[in-house]
Length: 112
Length: 308
Image (cartoon, rainbow over all chains, first blue to last red; front, top):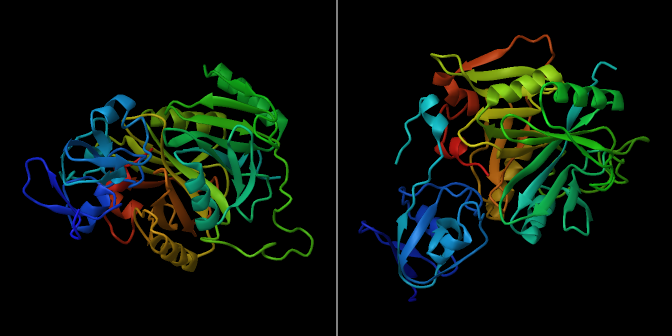
């Protein structure tokens, strides 16, 4: 890591997000106005910011096993709000099933 | 006594991922007092203006969410009546022995059609740190954090909203104060139930998954207290959802935020008084933005989709 932090990219995107040491990935993305990831509770409980790290080192904080099981953790699934990059990193976004059914009923367009 | 049967929301048991962080949040930020920590690890808390022993129970778990919401009932006779009616309606009613939570009498427990567990009980010990009753001061001690007055209500998400509505109205004697309905079909999307003079004691939103918690709400004094709560959220880097703002529904002034496990909390003030003869207030889904957030007049995606 240099003083610019870790360089983080979403698979398929050229946009570089800079993540400070000990900064959750999601917070780094929010701070830099990166709108593609859903931001939920930011605390590991709701699961909407689920990702899979494809390259790079990271540590995780506590998160609901309902959203990231032990098996998934071993396969580098995580929640962005509880993912702390320890190197430059690439990841993909995981679209959750079973969310937002009532959005259509409420007449709101869900922005992806 | 005019108010009988189910009196009010009594307590909730919340699952948290990290107890130490959660105690800081609920005690130092929201301002509850820790009543006791029991051998099984559960931590019991109460707000300063509550007479009963506890209102918030934290249980450490590897998954966030709500274990159960419990309502206090005015007499054993009502408790027996509810048990009988629930059974007659096909619900499995589980008795829970006195003392399963410290200071709490026997409970009955059932799972509502939206998948949520609700408990009913009559007895809870009075707190030795509750509101004064003899020439009472406003409070017995200096307040902390957001100065929550009491645990007030929950908003829960689940599929069979109509089923839960029926149980609460027909068996437990609640009234529906407000609804949000689909413009075309009239299907209820959101439901605001009250057992008291409050605009809501329990709210339910129709959702694909059962047994979900949207938020646990605490009453604060006024609009200024909500501003002070917002100051605390930024100062201590608490994850904020939305607000300060106001609801069209209930007219409450509000701010939403998350506990360290991602369970949503609200502190709110105001709102109208409800009487059982009030006509039902109805919002069409096409106006739901104003119904939920009266100033923004639009919903944020997070409010509708993020639950634990």
